[in-house]
Structures are given as structure tokens and as C-alpha cells.
Length: 260
Image 1 (cartoon, rainbow, N blue to C red):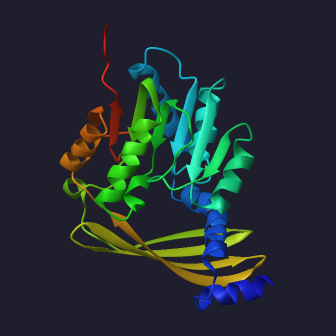
Image 2 (image 1 turned 30 degrees about the horizontal axis):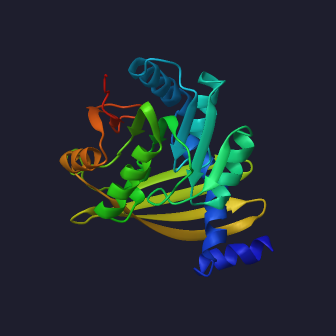
């Protein structure tokens, strides 16, 4: 069965749901090899949260939570916090649930979700908002995030890619060479008017089988002033940290504080 699966990947006949599950199984290994430091990022996020809030957060929602690595690290810093996450990939959510058993995970679209409750902190990290197809979807997502904020709540969005911060496209190759996984990922990018189209070509050798597959992702880009419009239409005040937890920058937004 493993070799049939590998052959389906090679010839592009892998069903979409299975493809997401396959990618989910590799995701953490790839970003560990890339040196992504979730623990350090979570420590900085926790410091940002406590600095901008008047009290310890009792609830936190992570939008596009993926395999739950940020939530796992944040749970160590906020052990009594009620945690939740949403993502569209069932494969990613299964891994996240194993990492953070106490959290509530829901399969949902960030541009059209309603959990029926509010949170002290809402996060959308690792440029996840850029995977929405266009401005309209991004604005809807921010509006939904704002609706899920408690009074005095804090919204943190890591935009990742904005036109004013773009670097020239280049080819990148990363490898993993471990006893249970040999992987090569070649990445190429093409800039369009409002997007970056990234193609990942994978070659994978695991005990379960050998395979290769290609994935193309369209990363939507929007300038800072457009984010400003979206925040303001959602009734939020905002600021921008040029560095953020991973060098991508970080938007901080909240509902205006009113006094009687």
C-alpha cells in the first residue's frame, strides 16, 4: 500500500484529503530542519501578550493552528489558559490534538468561522493569513477574528509577506538526512501583482516507501495600509511590531477601550 501511495504522489493522482494528511506527517520535520524555533517564538509572544494586557489571559484561540506547535509551546507559558485552535486540515488537527490534548480543535475556514464564544487572545501566526485567496477573504477573516475577541482582548497577526518587505525570488533547496527520513525540497517562487506563487518539489524516502510530489501555493500579499483599513472596518485599533516573533513583523490589534 505504501508503494501504491508513493506512485500516486509521483503521477499526481493523490486525493486532496490524503495529500493534506501526507503533508501533515512531514510538516514538523521540515520546519525543525529549517531551524524554526517555536519555543523562542512562543516565549516572545507570551511576553507581548502579558505586556499589552492588564491581566493574565484566561483563553486563547490560534487561527490556522496547523500541527499545534505554537499552541503546545504557549500552553507551557499559560498553563491555566483555555486553549482552542482552528484549521482546515484534518491531518494537521489530529497531530495538534495529540500535542495539546486539553485544547479544543475545530476544522474551520478562517474567513467563515463562528465558535460561538470570545477569547482574551486570538493569534494568526506564520503568515497563515496570506494563504487566503484575496483581499476580500482576508478582510472577512479579520472581521471574524475581531468578533471572537473578548472586551480588552488582543489580536496578534503575523503577516509574513507585504510588498514593502519583499525580497527578490530565489531558488532554495533544503534536505533532511536522518535514519527514518531522507527528504529533499526544492522551492521556486514567482512574483505576481498581488501574490507570490511558490512551487515545492519533494523527494521523500521513508521506511514506508519512496515517492515524489509537487505542491504549488499562492501566497496573497497586501500592503500595510490595506491591513490598516481591514482593522479599522472591524472596529479595531492597531499597531505594528517590525520584528515580531520570527522576523516577519506582527500586527497587534484590539477593540477601543471605553470608559464610562
